[in-house]
Image 1 (cartoon, rainbow, N blue to C red):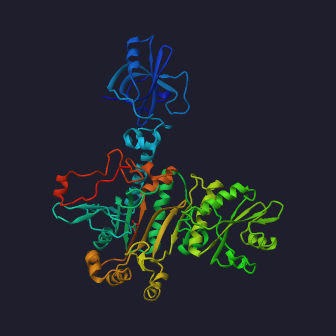
Image 2 (image 1 turned 60 degrees about the vertical axis):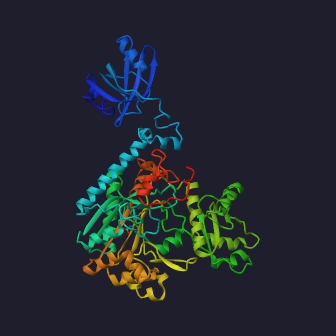
Image 3 (image 1 turned 90 degrees about the horizontal axis):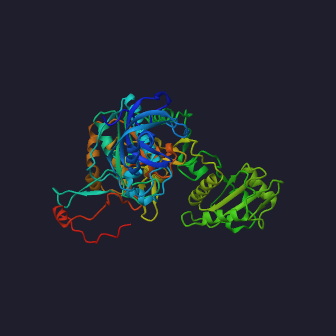
Length: 587
Ligand code: ASP
């Protein structure tokens, strides 16, 4: 037997028990005639003590042991004179009687402790060592618990987990596909699923009624903190349901996870239409941990010959409570913030509602204190508050002010990671118009059903058609999204034509789905949650990378496996591939 106990379970109640432990040496230190070793395994850390006076030979052995060696120790549980209240095993130690080295280790490239000295790239290269760190491991344990609880909830609700293939044809979710060449079909390629969208819809045609899958999806997109080229979805689909049924079912799942994993009871989730979300927060995934909604003031600004406002389609303020005391420097910083190319505003206008009730602004030349007072009143500002105002074209300015609102939320400490604010955003537009390409794109995906009452608009004003589509948002992060699907092959055909597919193209790419719909497709709809994002929200992480065992870096590389990599000519020949470009320098 390698061990009788693990490194996290011994307490004072186990005093005098003889135990065998095995694990990794976190730290070894000499103290007078004693050697102390912190022994680590998945369950915790237990202190071992080797006493020179009691057993000099054993003590000599222990002195040779280095960091990350794998050892096995037999000893007696004794009470520590110097207790460590920071760890659950901190009241006891093991007075060792035998020591077996199971495997020595080279000196690790960084310290394997909560506060490591290893930089990001180094830790990724040696991810298997990084994963020994308690903080990183805890994220994966959390991920396991969330996936497990999800399965349990959905199983109780009669969902069946069905595996769908990874080698498929292209799925149009709006991103680029990763493709895999087919040796047996030269010149032809599989695509890795961006999601199992069409397959889960086919399962509904097959009568599976309630499907789910915790499944890898692949999207060849530029990476950001909350994106990885491969990521995991909790993918779900249901038949004979309406939007309301889906929202209830998956609000239920979300509440269940918060309750079972975090012990938090959530109230019912508010619902906001896409139009309202944009109007109030300039975002379709508003962070509702704090208020600070937009207040439009265009009508209050006219007739004062301020050209910038007079020529702006949209003028709105946010009210930063208690920020009237912001210094010139702080206001300059905010101006710089909104002028950054990623945000792109031309400038920032402010009104200070001073504690003494006077009003001062960056547009005092044009507006009287009475004018400013009206703006402040509309924004619900009190003495001591600061109004921040942006203006310009409506949609662009809403997005810019949305970014400023988030920045202010962060600066004012209103985005507490331990507070959770969930909501549904509903009634998304069905289509998005791309002015450059002069064509419509599906906002969600081409299988999303228009609201029945908006179907006539498809012919007259497609941009105005609302979809039966919904997103679940937590703390400003889109955790999941889905829609009620089109289940009528004629309507689906029409949708493809609005999206610019010829009949032949639609038949070639989606013939399988439209044909399936001819054989009794039930009304159906579904949703997919991003498991990685969901876990990061629960863990309070800034990046989804930290809850993925072996993530890719920002250039989409796995630095540990050194992937992607070039192929040998032989392999390329076998796949009938000709590579023309020399592989780029690795980043
Ligand atoms: N397949 C969709 C997505 O990945 C989710 C859904 O509509 O169920 O975003």
